[in-house]
Image 1 (cartoon, helix red, strand yellow):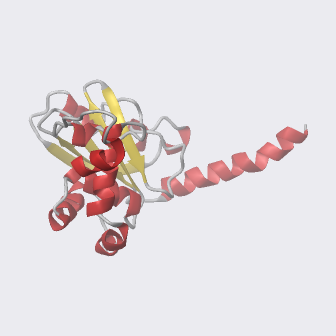
Image 2: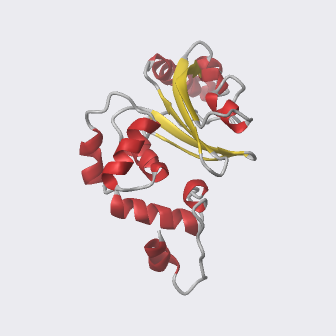
Length: 201
């Protein structure tokens, strides 16, 4: 991370990084994000990381934790890499008491899948943010608790959420059942097919 600052920001400013920044600073427009990304590219190179994930049949924070140990990297950085380059569709979201801090999604997921600004009451993330004594929880939850889209109402998503020592919550979402993603793709295709006729009118 500090090497990333030296590569990108030397001579511009002085940085004193706290550990919390390694969790929250993953937006794409600030120096901390650039430093985090540099460290990830250096220590979790895609050509080594993808083969290590190829046989995974479950995408959750436990799988990310095992990979983090193998590569000697932080859970957050490894979980992001797993979402971006893993073999199955997934999403990682960071929440604080103020709401959603950032999220990343698998490249093949629809850009319409935008997680809610605060987790729904029927999520494990909500419980962890609002006083649960547990540090983590995992299971199937309604997709409508995570996404404000009509098409997701009858589907579920696998959620694994963990609370950090700072109170932030990392939530990994994985589509064990991909029927929702298929339905979303089909809905988008129908909308795209209607657009030319609407334009011609």
